[in-house]
Image (cartoon, helix red, strand yellow):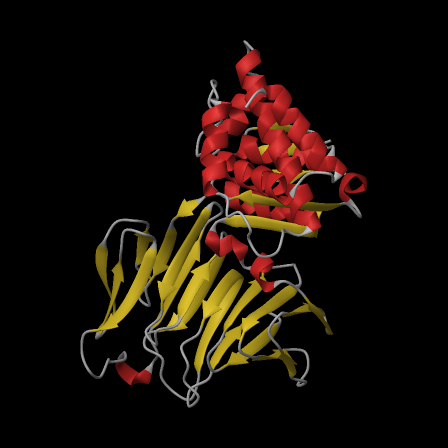
Length: 372
């Protein structure tokens, strides 16, 4: 596929007079290019790529992508294509581009802190850890820590003092843990979760700072409670996302089941239904309808921005790539951003997409990036 054919195709998509198959071609082509870990190759065989993508298309698929998604995909595709052409035609790669391209995305890494203060680095290396008397935590090679009982009656420390473990992810890190009750927790970057090992008593209570997606094992006799600095969330078995970074609103998004939210500043309980999101700022809790799959896409390796405030976009990018953005508030106030970006890209590829979609420019100095 020649550069002129590519341009003509994207022009048709922008005008809205392309076929559904052409829209799908742009979407799939963009995703195929973005999934590459390294910058796009110098020599691109457009004909082979076209044949590959058309072979993957499901002709006659039910439904079509939403307008915002197609626009975001086209914008992102244009930025990746522009970068490809630049790499092919330019004899000099700027120092700025080299510095950004060298910053890799986050990975499976965390720190497990045992009840006695011992710290165990977590990653992708299989290992077995005595997490508490009668309980072993087994780490596999895919970034998951799984708790298992070694006795039928797991013990506690003397004096019935509960045994607590904490998993903490750094900036640029993520991790999964299967708790002793079978509940699965996906922990995003710069987050921590503290939990008893094993769960005893009338409830299963964990403490969260940061962001996590929960798949809670059902147990009506022992409700699962997630506590943050501002609220508690009570469930018996359901899937939901909690974002509660310090100095930011607590945001709870329900994917399935039901939850009850109680702000710590009041005794009023607020139920949520699937597809609803509750935002708590101070004493004010507001509920709205959202696409839960967009909010939780991070655990599946995607940034999904659907009219997302640009400040929030930069916060998410900064945590995942361990960089800090500085900007004048007048640049980002009231600006919103649409895109779907794989979290496997290097920073340069992500910045090129944001630059194209926002008309901003980015200058890097170490791990600090100034937005202009």
